[in-house]
Length: 483
Image (cartoon, rainbow, N blue to C red):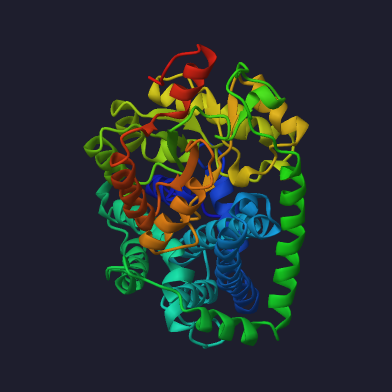
């Protein structure tokens, strides 16, 4: 087998960094192995791409159905909405689509590798390019069987994937512009440029203002009726149902703090988990998950500064490694730094070694990079809050788990105004006007919606906005207010 040159190794590291789940530099052996697995025949790649793209389509389609059901439940019985099976369905969809989008981005990187590296045959390169073109067509709204996605649903189905592919575009551009990596090898440069053009083209559709974007219920119903006749949709729905059962069961015994008299400390029991229900009267904590995001988080920070508010950021350690300056800016702004695991894995489905990496390893990365002590942890999808081994691992690393009592569902909804309405509806059900609000600082609609919420909170003279740690310190020290 041909050995990789020095600049090939550097380029592989840059490309594969965005798809490598472990916090380590990709080795040449593993890089080649990943690309070799991708260098399959055309039929195998077609099946893989179809499964991924159809899964993303079905995730957001079902997610929209469940979102409409959830909003209807908020009108009928708002106090039980977060404990409903519909809400568990939404969390199951989120878990599924996260993995599908991550796998699509990883496949894309490996396909680029195959088209660019001289070790692969012309047939392998052609197969890889065909698969890349299929992914590009999907991001333009065309499925692998040539059908067009329902026009009104395109932003809903594709925008999160486009956001992730935009980050990939930036990675490719850095590699292309680095003369020390590319040198005079025109085949690498041409392969990168060709796929950067493809990625750039898919972004045009989403450059328009989406502030008023609405999903038509009739369009969703029509799409579901068509897909409901297809075997892969039926199987996918069965997968979601199974996942939802597991999540619903794991959350069934969830009990947040119901009083403010108990001491909160790292524990696998009730004292080591807070949900906002035991917060002091007229006190809200705004929290952001999954970041930092390169283009979105800085605006969130500016919005918080403009409102003289502080928030809690539950960061992914892998994002802190990828965007250290953005993560540092969150700390410099005086925000609360917390952990949301390393890769956003569903921790009820991992073994002991992975569990330690996602909890203990993530904490160490964030603390080492930012020079802070991480005291708070939030489980991805909330999965594992009742799992003894997961909760024990969180407590073992001296962290308190933080749930929420208001979920904006901003990952499934692209309209800031409807996100705000959903948020205020849930906040209105708090008997003490207090709790923990869940946003994600990686979506453009979340930036706008959370700013609208800040505008609203700023008008309420008796309402305080505090970090989660500020409230914990207040309750533990019996202070009259949070810091």
